[in-house]
Length: 504
Image (cartoon, rainbow, N blue to C red; front, side, top):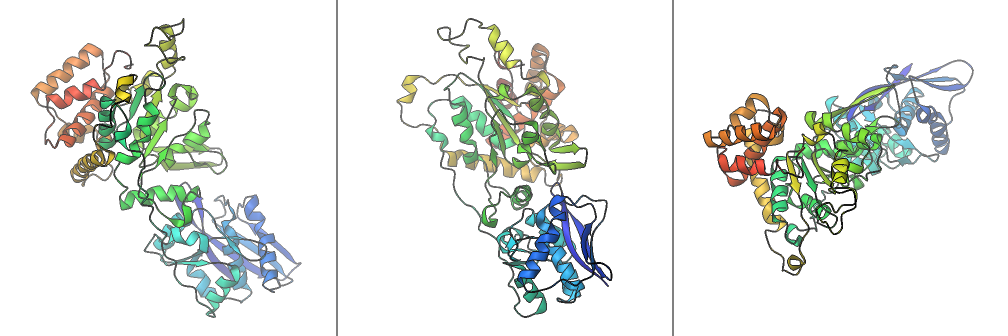
C-alpha cells in the first residue's frame, strides 16, 4: 500500500503542491527519500526516526521509500519533516489515510517530536485553500497562515498532538489570525525645519508612487526627510497586505503571525551585494526590492552602491517584477516599490560651498554623480536639490503641516486613483499608467501642452521623461482635486524634473 500526504515546495512567492508518497515493502531495512531532495530534506529521515522513537513508535523492519512528487521539482527546506512523518504513520496504519490525504502539512521536527516554526506558512495556506484542504503546521506558524480565511488552519505543538488530532482522541482547534500591527509612525514631518519644497516633493511622490532622488550637501536633511515618508503613506489595502506578507513569510519576517498594514520601508546599506538587493543566493530568495513591494526602498549614498547593483534596478523599476535567474532556479518576485535615493553633490559633499569644497571642484561633482547612469537617472520622476538649512531656521518653532495632515491629502489622492483605475487591475497609482490610458487621464490643456513641448525641445527631454512629467502632473492635479491637468500642474512637474545641478 502507498500512503499519500500533501505539502508544498516554494518557487518565489508561489507554493507549488507536492505529493509525499510512502511505500513500506518487504526487503532489507532501509529508509530512503527520493524526488530531488536537498540536504535538509534528506536529513529528515533521521529527525522523523528520532521523533517517532520519542513517541514509542518503532519503524517496521522493512524497506521504507519516500517519493516527493513531482520528482523533477527541487525540494528545499526542513518543512518536509511533518508530511513525511504523516505519510509514514498512515502507511503503517497508525493514523487514518483519508485524514492525511485531506490536508496539507508542513513543519520541522525536533528530535523529541516538537514542531518547530517554518517559513512560508502564508503561501502554503493559499495553496491549501485552492485545493480545498486543511493546513497542518506548527503552532508558532499558524497565526500568519490563519489570515487566509478560505483555509482551515490547524496549529500543533508536536507530532504527537497531530496524531491524536487525526485519530480523534484530542481534536485541535482552528488557529486564529495574529494581531494587526497598528503602531503609528513616531517621526513627524513637522519636525523638519525649513525644506518646504522638499516636503512638497515627498507629498507628490507618496501620492502617485513616483521615484524621487534628493541631492544635497551633508546635513541638509535628506535622510531625515526620507525617514518621514512612512508617516505620510496610506495603509496597505487588504490585497496589498496579503501580497506583502507572503514575501515576508518566505523570509521569516512576520512577527508572531501578525500582518502589518504599514507599508514596508527598506533602507539597505550601500555595501549590500546584488543578491541582497535584487534577490538570489541559496534558493533564489527575495531581495530588498521585493521586500519593499508596495512600499519604499530608500537608498542612501546612492552613488556609493556598486554600479552593477544600480543598473539592475532599471528593469524592475519599469516592470514592477524581477526574474531571479540562476542555474537551478528561475523565480519571479513582485517588486512594485517607490525608489527614494539620496546623494551628496560630490565626493566631499560641499560642491556648492566654495569655502569647504575640495580642490577638484567642480569636476568632482560630475565624476561623482556620473556613477549614476543616464538611463537610471531618467527613471526618477522627481529630482530635488536639497539646500543646507540656515541656522536661523533651526531656531524657529515647528511649522508646516503635520504628517497626519499630509497623509490625509495623500490618501484622498490615492482614493481618486483607485476609482480611476478600477477597471485596470494592472494599474494602481499614476506611476503605473502608460500608453493610451496615460494619454486619456493626463492630457494637459492647450497652455500646458505648449509649455511641455517647449521644455522638451529646450532641455532635450526623452520620451520617457515626457511621459513621467505627465504622470507627475496628473498626481499634482489629484492632490488639488482638479479633474483635468492644467498648465500650473505641468509647470510644477517640470520644476521637479529640470534643475541645472540635478538633471542628467
